[in-house]
Length: 210
Image (cartoon, rainbow, N blue to C red; front, side, top):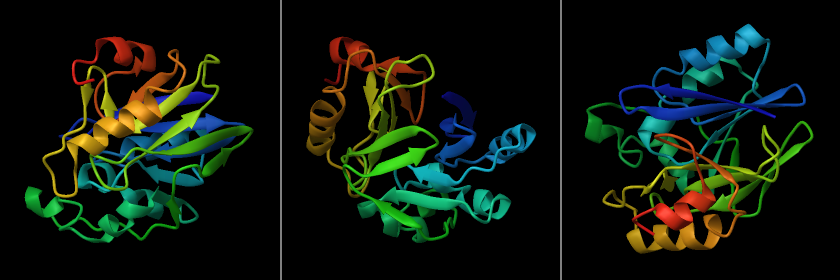
């Protein structure tokens, strides 16, 4: 498995391209995702799936652009966040003075769903709190054989997602992290929506919010 990281846009969102068995998947689509398109085309890749970890504007703003680049691309998001894709009010783009609307989701994800990428399988973990429908993606074996998890804006390196937005809940987010993320193997590599990579073991022992 290959995981390629792109830190993009004014909000420094981390987008990812995951490659396994000749297939590719994109995780989140921030401003500046032209770099993702250029990278994939340079590698001869056409992602079959774009997974939005949640529905805030900074993570979905380039959904339409990626869909235009690859018309067969399917967009997936947590079920509760599905309505955020097409609502500038719900995705908070209006707060930024913008009017961002994504194509509708092709697949609404719930806890326990499986995403197949070549021979790899990602499990959908419901991690609400930052948004009602926030999700994480877990695979038991990543690039170096260690497990990996994409946590969106639920868990960061020694930080957690904001909970002062509409639909957010600090208590729900802490419960999601403790019950769905900190229970993963400590060697699990965390790929967050902002900031550097970390591990579950490090966050369990060093994250001041937990």
